[in-house]
Image (tube, rainbow, N blue to C red; front, side, top):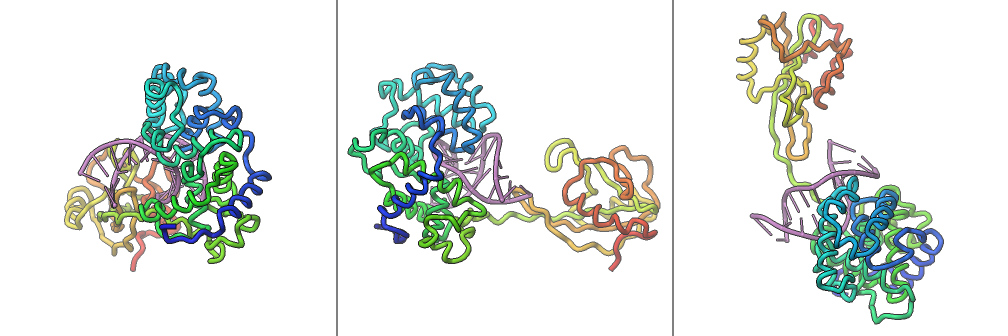
Length: 375
DNA sequence: AAAACGGGGAG
DNA sequence: CTCCCAGTTTT
C-alpha cells in the first residue's frame, strides 16, 4: 500500500467479521434495499448525506411515489422536486439531483452510468463516495456476476472515516488531503468483490450504530482486539476535529449601572445584527466614551472597580467583556430605550447570554445597599 | 453553543 | 492547496 497505515486486519478477515456482525445487527429492511436499483440507491444516498436514516425514510417513500423512475424525476418541474425536499435541508442537493436526472436522461439513455466511478462523478451532486455507494449497492443483486472489483466501489462517508481512523488510530483531521488519501487507501483495501452491497451497508451501519461519534460500543465490537484507538484507551479521540481558525478578539466595556435600589439599567439592541432585539448592558469601546456617557446621562455616578474580564465566543469572533459597575442616584431625564431591571423581580426580557450571566451573578447581592462587588 | 455532515466552488 | 457555504441534528 502506498500510504502509511498498515491495515488492522487482512482484508478477508475484516470482511468476514464485519459481515458476520452485519448479518446479526445490520439493517436489512431499508426501503431502498428492496426493490434495489441504481436510481433508488442514488436518491437514498443523496438524502442520507445530510440526514439520519429514520428521518429519510418517509421522505424517500414520498419521493418514490411521486418520482418512481429517473425519467419521471427528470421530467418533473423543479418546484415539485423541491417541494418534496422541504424539511430535509441543503436544497442545492435537490437541484443537483434533478439536474443529474436530466443529464442521465439526455446522455445515458435514462439510466445512471453505473459502469464507472468517473461517469457517476461527472454528474452534479455525486462525489467519489456517493459514486462508490451507488455502484456497490446496485451491482451485486446476484452475487457472482460482474467483473467489478471492490476498489471501484469503495465508500468513505463520515461513518467510514470515523471507523477507519479509530481502528488505525489515524491522527489529523480527515478533511486534510493527506489523511483523506490514507483513508481512501484503507477503504479500497477492505472493500470486497463479493457481497459488495452487504459489505457497503455493513460498514455504514457499523459506524452509525456501533462505532458512534460518542459512546462507541467497544465492548461488543468485533474489532476491539485489533482496534488501535481502543488499545490506546480513548477511542473518542478519533477522528480529530477540524482545526478551528483563531478567532479575532474584540473588546467591550459593559456598563453595570445600578440605582440606589440595586436595579440595573438595560437597553434594547437594534432589531437586526448581533443580539438583534435583545436587551443588553450599555457597551463602550473605551473608558473615555463611558465617562462621556455617564457625564451626559447620570446623576451622581460612582465608579467601582471593574469586574474580571471574560470572553464570549461567537461563530466569527471572540468578545472580551469587561463589566464596569457604577452606582448612581438616577438617570437625567426620561429614556424610552431602556428599563431598570429589578434582579429580585426580573421582567421577562430576551437577554444576551453574557448579560444574563452577569445579572444572575449579582442577584444574591441585591439587598446590599451599595451594590457592585468591591475588590 | 458548537461540531458534524459531502459536495461544490472561489481564491 | 485552503477556505467557505448550505440547513439541520446531535452533543
